[in-house]
Amino acid sequence: MRALQVPATTGPEAAVLAEVPDPDGAHPWAGGERLLVEVHSAAVAFPDVLQSRGAYQHAAPVPYVAGGEFAGIVLEAPAGSRFAVGDRVAGLTVFGSAADQVTAIPGYTVRIPSTMSFNEGAAFFLNYLTAWFTLHRAGFTDGESVLVHGAAGGVGSAALDLLKVRSDHLLAVVSSDSKAHVATRCGATEVLRSGDDWPGRARAATGGHGVDIVIDPVGGDRFTDSLRSLDVGGRLMVVGFAGGGIPEVKVNRLLLRDLSVMGVAVNPWLERHPGFGERMLNELEAMAASGTVSPLVGHVLPWDRAPEAMGIIDRREAHGKVVIEVRPEHTASPEGEHP
Image 1 (cartoon, rainbow, N blue to C red):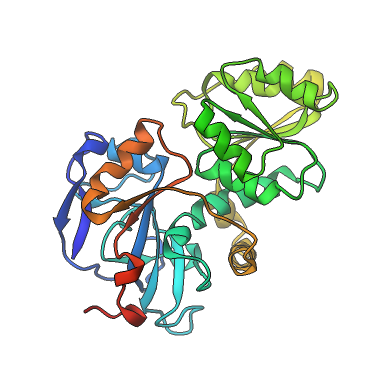
Image 2: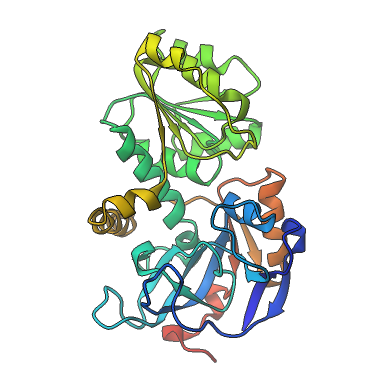
């Protein structure tokens, strides 16, 4: 089958189109349950860039097939599972999605409606799962103020989408005019520039108090300023370190203003609270079925340009999700059958 393969961990530029064997058995995280999906759209994210350099915590041995997210049609499903052959699905695989077929993880796969395109489906699962889980861990309640870093990226845009009708003050921090436009389109009530005095403007926008929650998938130098932008009792949610640097916190800052810093990592939470997984999948399927969410697909690459996908993220050019069309929808075969 066709695949986007990474033969060496020398960075995104190592990715090449290749012919590889069809998937065998089950995904390593699937507990032996074989859920085989015909991929119509695949997506890459910051972890894919890290993995291409051998720096991701779940790195795969080379050569491996790139792409951590997919949308497509079920070809084989475990007996008694939630899925049936022909279901339209989207999910997270960590690796292996940028190919004609992928073995999926039932616990990280959801059904998507026909009203959601496969490109949108590939942009849906990881971003909206992360954004939803971040708000769950933060204990967000309607009306609270939220500041979102990396607001034009995948997780940031998903957070804005989920919050646009739930937050009185929804602030976005971005680095360029084009990203400011994206953040506004996704629902931000005020857009702040990372090169300006955004902590001061965040406090001014909230009556001098500061925001209740900061969602930070960027890290780096802005971490301390994020603490300064919080109201008393505020929560800073650590989602990732796309900015490259892993910051440190002086805990006296937390003590003086009753602040909290919380990490956001779904997998260890599910391992400790296995019953939570069913709620998570139900919430995501309800979101998709409601038609109220709009996954931001910022870049769509045809199959012959798939090797360029990770470079867009590495150069920080991405607005929303970077998607690879494995099978353009107008040429997709019916019911997941191969021509």
